[in-house]
Length: 73
Image (cartoon, rainbow, N blue to C red):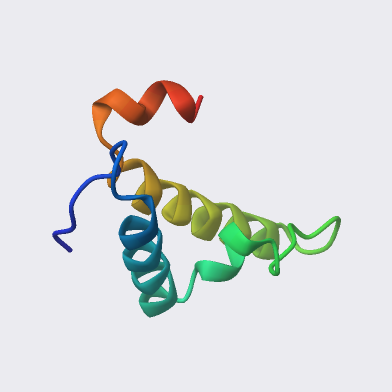
């Protein structure tokens, strides 16, 4: 996807586009908190949750301008 990186002036449009990307990938719930990390259970379930959570983080990180990165740490 090619979207304008988050900067000081485009929060609303950026948020909407990133949410659409996350939805299309089926990982929006990891950002919204509706897919909680399994507290216990099969290792495979926990590993899959961690993979999907990291995918969601990556979508966000790759769409943020360098000037905004300090705000995400």
